[in-house]
Image (cartoon, rainbow, N blue to C red; front, top):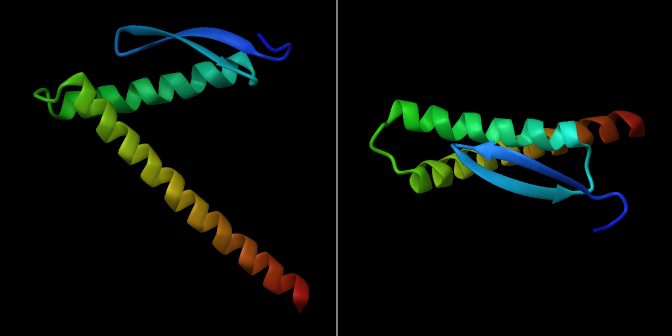
Length: 86
């Protein structure tokens, strides 16, 4: 294990996962809780979803959020760069 590596056990939809990352423990727990929340939210809205399908749909939704935020960020960077040139 790397010197800065953190190992954290988290629970997502009743399953325990050991996550390793070079990130603070609190951050890892927060991210895992977010994923758990998104999956449970989908399963609550559609009880017929299997855990696997709910996890895939949650991943797609989270990827969509990331993509939209990246586009917004890039748009803001362009605005800032344009303003600096003036």
